[in-house]
Image (tube, rainbow, N blue to C red; front, top):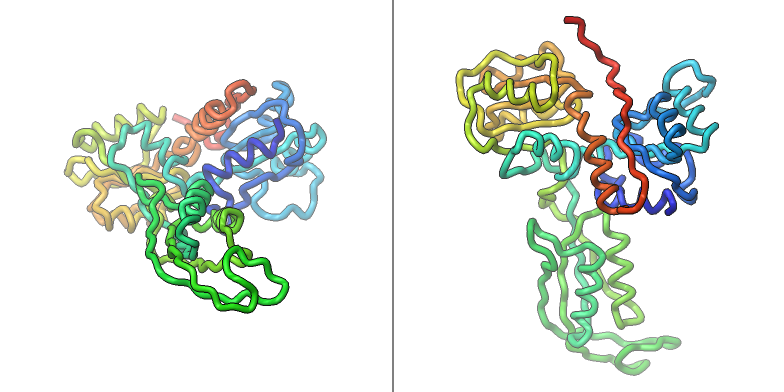
Length: 365
């Protein structure tokens, strides 16, 4: 098992292209070509986590938060970031981060939070723009099915819960093969008329290279005609935050008690009670104040997130309950999520969950 086998699988679930511009997801130390001796999943990649990986003979740490966000100008061990990087490099430990790209997929960090609260009818709170494209191509009628199947196999053709979605329209194509060509049909120097099927298939933007390769590989023509267009449609499974519904409406106090129990909280910072029941719940793991207006716009009764500033609590405008449960607390189950995803794929391989509690925030009660 190579480290690349594991990271490539993770990127098939949460492509690196989905990370935010400020982020640093991906392989931070180590080589993708290394043989992997074991994987340790964690929320953070601190020095203590690296030591835990060493002790358990795991040479790959998969963490949610990247240990390096910006560039390091010096690496001499003066802070926790430098010490963790030094320990990883000295002990040949690969550090891999799967951060905002995992935040931005339906079954990622926010999906795990929704699981814990048993939310139903889930959808992305703030879908990302420019995440969908469409490919058009023109194929001889008899070869249309093999081309369509190849494009589907590359991951195209999904719309919601439907797969292998496409559209075809018959027409007549023309071409004249020039000198040195080897046309699939027709003769050099003669205009050829061919009954063709125009095929249209939608696909996620990050799959463009794979979809085009599949098309060209399966297409019978020497020169393949195709167009790729950007779509204004939102991808329903890609974006920030999540919204869902509780099985039954709850009193606000009872709802906060549920949140406190599920997330094992010492306390919850929240806005004044609205006096209304909670049914529709928006959430965002980590710092989610940028989504308050989105949560209000979709009529959420409550919004669970972290790292809210004093003045940002006023943005609820007495229309919604905001609950700040803490950054670590909101994302703590990501370790469990990563381990489950890898254990399901790599059945006979050592995948461990970190026992190090990396939360730097403590409460004096």
